[in-house]
Image (cartoon, rainbow, N blue to C red; front, top):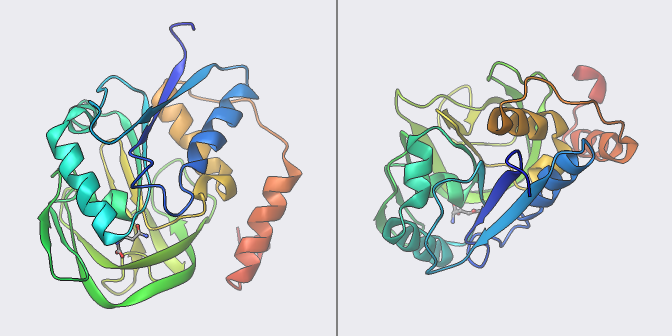
Length: 245
Ligand code: GLN
């Protein structure tokens, strides 16, 4: 393994893996491999110390009970908070994003202190948002529409230190405000309600995370017709033509 190996942490897949978000690690690893860049996926299990020196951290979604367990574990093993503090790249999906916030209240009314690295608060929206989620990215460097599948009961409100990842075109995203927005960006943290695994259908976002984590300012383009097809199909399912990009 060389010094330039990109180390990708999959955080608590036993409890934050319900929605297939672990596939994002496979997407990142393949996109690196196809460019001849070595990578290592580090799976961080319940009760294990969280390394603070990884390049990219991936947190997925989870049901409320699993989410509570994940929050407790990450509070007891604070490597992720240290990594976020030094600006490491973090992709946090749904429950993962909620956990990084100041607090969240789950569907049963349990009020849980989050890790406090993201200026966001989550509360029950009184319904469940499920279906295709599409947004226009609001982050410099991202131009392609963002597409994923949302499935959550929480609504997430951002404070002044966080800004949304995208402006919602279809679906609910953070489910507060008008216009609706999705996700939260603060330092190296990128939170979103897009499951999928979302990076499979958002190649530009995947490469954006790789570039941020590796310090590379460009990557060799990849010609992947199946990814374009998947992306086109999913945007079509949301009633958005790929030509809108
Ligand atoms: N339990 C959380 C909610 O319903 C997160 C769900 C998820 O990660 N998909 O809002």
